[in-house]
Amino acid sequence: MTMKLFGIVFGFLCVNFAIASEIYKAGVIHGQKEIHSFKHLIDDASKMDVDILVLPVQEPSEMSSYDEAIKTISEAAKQAGLYVVLNVFENTHCQHGKETIRSNLVFDREGAIVAVYRKPVNPFTNCTTSSSDLVTFTTDFGVTFGLLMEEDLVLREPQHLRGLKNFVMAGVWQSEIPMLSAPQFSPAWSYVNNVNLLTNFGVYPGKTSQLDSEELSVFELQKNGGDDNTLTPAILKTHPSEDLSQYVIKPLDLQASNKGVHDTVCHTGFCCNFYVKTAVRDANPEITYSLAAFNGVRQYSASHNIGTQNCGVFACTGNQKNCVSGLQKSTVTFERISIAANFTKQTLQYPIIQTALPTEEITFDVKFDGTSNQVTLNIVDGQSIDNFGIFGRDFSKDFESNYVFGVNNTTKTEGVYDFIFNEEFQEVVDYIWIRLRVLIVVVSIYILEMM
Image (cartoon, rainbow, N blue to C red; front, side, top):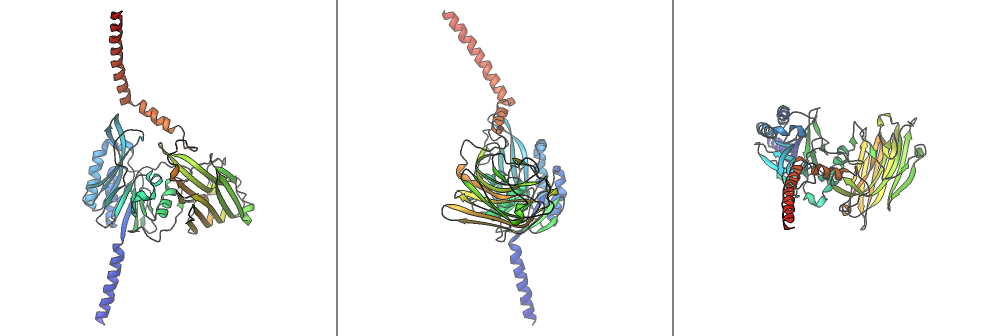
């Protein structure tokens, strides 16, 4: 009897050890803080047995203390005995003078820097930083991470991820709209690629938060990315405007949708099929909903054109071409929204869901029929929905020189102007002009003497 009991206990311990060995803990520190204030939070994370911790972005104003920041975080990581990821700005000398560089640095449990990923802030500068290959680092808890910056989620094709199941994305996310704000796109990217994604604003899938305070959140994650990765909508406290100026849109008749409505919206040969059924209680006339479709090339950040195919339902409190959400006043419950479309085979689709209230009644299905991706996105009993749609990345169009939808069509020109009027560049121009003037004088004197 004693041996049998011992066997049961031993087996129980073995099972728990096996389960624990497939899990690691990740932490995220929230909010803008001075570099020295991280120390006690890193210590707190250590007490929670966190294996890897992502720190908030350090603003460019902190660049003067770059060396001090590295020393401080290195010592804190060593004392706490955990991996720490830090995104900082630093100045470096490039061909045309000083440039500001974004750097992702990874410290191991001994405080040593084990991975570095750098990119210039000015995308037009000729400055050698990290290679275009995926930067990785392997931890002592048996996980290899890919190190990313915000634009990599949108720009890198799946084959460039090298089959990894865990990624750290650090850096400032410049929200691109529609559908490309960080809280919307990050969980969708994690879900579609079936990977763990650690960022400075959250962890995805991140379903098992052990601690969620205003300063520190801690999560348990499956090392293999988790086969039970579920789709989690973005729950936002603020609602950015949506620029739909290049979309084909149709207003949604909320009264008619009480009985359920089918509609189709097409843009340049790409069609989105919608089914919407609502329950409206004294509808707020200030809030409208639109069905929208887009197929083409848009500008992403300052230096990239990306091909996209998008379908969406958007809430608006203003002009339908420039929606500004105000969902705290919404009285619309969507009993069901279904969006279906056939996407070209070079595309990858992401479900984008933004809501003020949580919901788990979401399904997303992709089927390839040999020529196209047949994609369906459904939500049941959705409340206070800001936008709901499918964002498709058409990588085959990324190198098209003329885009039809840009966040700001003058961005690239402004970047060139910034370079031309850079102080170091002006000094070079002045130097060359002085030398040319001397040469012109000498040549003029020579010509006069020959006459």
